[in-house]
Image 1 (cartoon, one colour):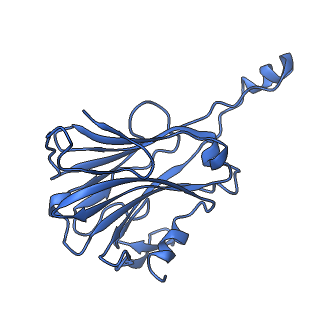
Image 2 (spheres, one colour; image 1 turned 135 degrees about the vertical axis):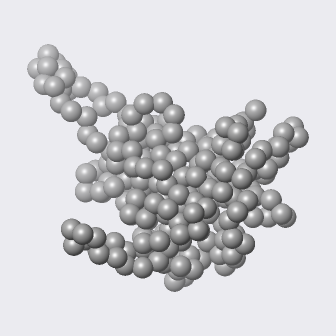
Amino acid sequence: MAISLVKGQTIDLRKNDQGEEFDLSTVTIGLGWDVKKQPASGGFLGKLFSSGQKEAEYDLDAIAMLLDANGKVADLGRTVTTNDGRSIRLYEGDVIFFNSMRHPSGHIWLTGDNRTGAGDGDDEQIIVKLDELDQRYQKILFLVTIYQGRQNNQHFGLIENAFIRAVDKRGKEIAKFNLSGDSTYNGMCSMTFAEIYRKDGTWKFRAIGEPHQSDSFIDELKKRVYS
C-alpha cells in the first residue's frame, strides 16, 4: 500500500515498513494538479457572460535537477541554436526541463508538456532509471513552475489537488505527497515538490513542498551552481 506523505517526511523507496519491496530499475515521478474553478460574477448577466468565457490556461512545467555530492548542478549543458533561430541554453545538461527533456545518459527524461492540468492522473511525468544512474549523481530535485505566472497573475494559491508520487517499474505506487492550494501559496509561482537522494545503499524520497515567488527555476538553479 502506498504511503501518503506529509511535508518534511522521508521514506525508503526500495522497501516500506511492511516489508514490501519495489523495483527501482525504472521509477515514474508523476505530478498532477487542477486549477480551481473561479466563481461566476453575481447576477444573471454575470452568469450569462461568464458561461461563454474560456478558462485561463495554466502551463505548469516539471523540472528535475541532478545534483552531485555537494548538492550542485555540475553540468549546465550547452547552448544550441534551433532551425528557427532560437537559442536554447542548458541543453543536454543536468537539468531536465521542457527545452531539454532527455538527459544524455538516457537514464532520466521528461515525457511531455501538459498545458492545462485537465483530467485525472499524472499531468506530467519524469522517468528515472534509478539503478542505472551514475554514482556522481547523489540527489534529484523536483520542481514545478507556472510559466509566466507572475505576468498572468497565476499562482499556487489558485491550484488545487496538486501532488507528486513515485511509481515503480511494476506500476506499484510507492508514495504520494498531496498539496492543496491555500492562502499561504498566494503569489507563489513555483514549488520545490520533493527530492530523491542516495543513502546507505538505497534511495530515499523526501516530501518538501516549499513555495517560491519566482515563476522560473533559474533562481533555484543559481543557488545550485554559485552559492
